[in-house]
Length: 505
Ligand code: AMP
Ligand code: MG
Image: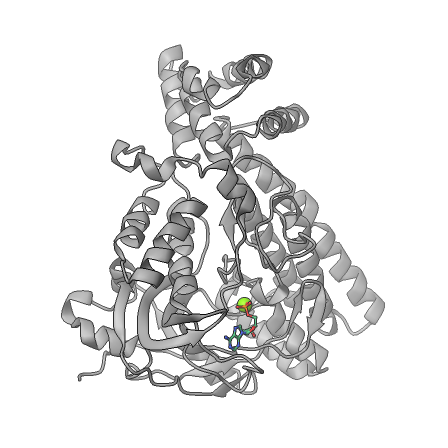
């Protein structure tokens, strides 16, 4: 079988010896290709039409690596649910290599489920098919929503069962990321007091993700500030679509600011800020409403890890780090308000309007919460209301009259803004607003019952059709195609009440 050719340029392996171990994927008995992201492949310089399926399956199972691959298991530590583990690392993952894509962006190509590495501890190094397809579905949903995320390139069934609570079909996922640098990567070297390696790592992160800082005076402080900004923007986007990551440990917090490691994640249905689905998150640490605080906490761990690089004087280092981290709440609030304004159809707002706009959002959200209204559909139907069609919005509420005062307030706020940049006639202005709102308020999210249905069919019956239909629907979340109406429907309330997600191990 011919080897796939990819133009690898493996900077991490080259520049950061000591941050990983060389390792090989474990061969799999019977690779069969279940998913392949053709558009992403082309972006990476791999023409899917030029490669047969058997070659893709043997390549993306790890049986036959592409030329130029340098498989390595990366070292990292991490705070998991608040507790520090000094040595986690890629227990079942391997970085295969890096590619510079068609847009000039450097991307990691990595396997998950490719066999145990020296970091595996007691784990088997394998992955079950269901959780890997889950990562495809949710990651692609996030991508289509315009939220920074790692993406799935391939899923290959291995033909080998893996034992969890029972035997399940095994699979290898190939994932593409801006990088796999995590807060936990820095914690690993900081905890060992290896400041030289820490500095090399920080300079590598700067060169790769924040090159504008390379020549700055206080570049490591700049790195901390920049990661803080990106994470604030990312979590604000999560909050805007009701995404609940579920396991926001510091080893799952990306330095590049992408959503990474889809395990027990899920989208919120009816609006309830306390929503948490993960079975292992016993104290609901990573509930929807806690996410901004939790990422702030993770950034404080990054700040601690970077302390030795910030200043020779320890007190000064602590002061600088504190200042950088304390910028998070304002930065997050700014991103959140911008996102909420866009969702409300307000494309601008003055500083004076800030306070009243926050109240407008909070009142809307408390209406949704009190009447247990579906978060996604409520925003989507508000776009109809912007055009004067309030019926479908009202239909979502058990007591729609409770909505009237708020609607009047919102409409007058909208009217106050119409003028300067919007079309002249009121009807045209309303249509433009509704259209803009439909571009930021999705109609389709990855509904939990649809995800579970698709994964059960694939994992239990070998039937990929529901997975493929759902994946296609998730690719166009902002388009209201009546043929996809089933995917827009909320799960039955009883399903959501009993819903638990599991870590993808
Ligand atoms: P995660 O919950 O996927 O972010 O993983 C947390 C840590 O557990 C990482 O160090 C993983 O490599 C490791 N891990 C998770 N599942 C397995 C497994 N089945 N075998 C070996 N290591 C694993
Ligand atoms: Mg992880």
